[in-house]
Amino acid sequence: SIFNAWTGLGGSADKGRGGQVNFEDPLLTIHQLRWLYRKNQYAKRYVNIFPDYALRKGWRVADESDDQEPTKAFDTELRTRTVAMKAAVAARKFGGCPVAVVTNNEDITEPWSSKDSEILNLIPLDPEEAIPVRWFSSMADPRFREVASWNINPRIGTISTSQQEFAIQAGEWHSDRIIYIPGSVLSDYERLSNIVQYGYDDSVLQTAWDAIRARTSDDMNLSALMEELSVTVIKIEGLASLQLAEQEQTLDMRARAIARDKSNNQPVPMGAGAE
View 1 (spheres, rainbow, N blue to C red):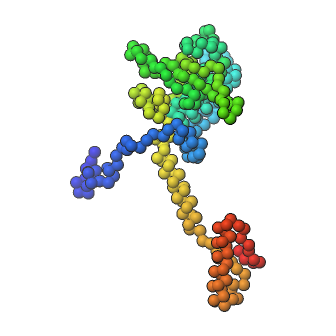
View 2 (view 1 turned 90 degrees about the horizontal axis):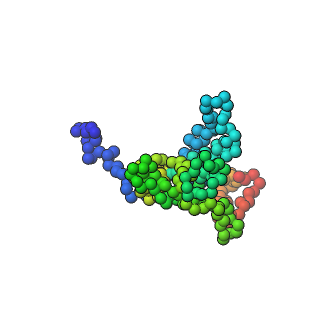
View 3 (view 1 turned 45 degrees about the horizontal axis):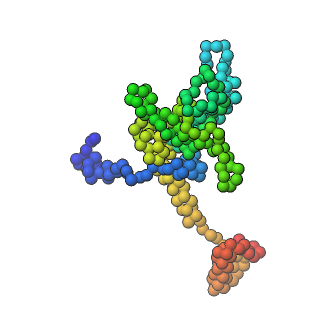
């Protein structure tokens, strides 16, 4: 917003103003996000740090009753702290995490009501297990452009190397039976236009990817530099007592033998007093 007429800073010749948004830089895919989290220490720490900090001591719900922990039995039975941790990590990693609310009312296409059914389990789902298929389309509906139903197909294990077994309640679930935990929140328009994961928000790793890549590259470059700076020292007993020509010949023969054995991945024999 300020141009220095004397130095040119802030103007068209300022190198600092040459950077532009790169529209050709693709977003990371679900598969890339999955492996980046599993293989890169910086990505894993960036994803985990907030859930770890927020949930390290659990939580306590207070109400008007005299019970100091009114939800303790519920939390213990449904393992809500474990579910919340898994869902928070998955949401930051993938951009969102749908949590299936399993009840004793098996009509999964209808909204869930606490009056006529009981919660049996809470299941965090992977993006490949939960796909949005319908949206609220009426502009008069307060939930306009929110997901109305999900196609749920949870993996529960394999019974052979070629056959996969799926849960009985796979199918189209009403959104009232899904608790959606967002990642890096997008607008409704952006979320519906998300080419990486249609209907989900953004992974926090999308914006951190350049920094993670740069930091990992710095680590690799530093390791390579330290390797190049290392100096190999050979100690041969009795070398100093030889004539200069004999020293050169002995050292050359020894160096060649070491290089040959190392190239063949063979142990390098050392004489008495040699290092």
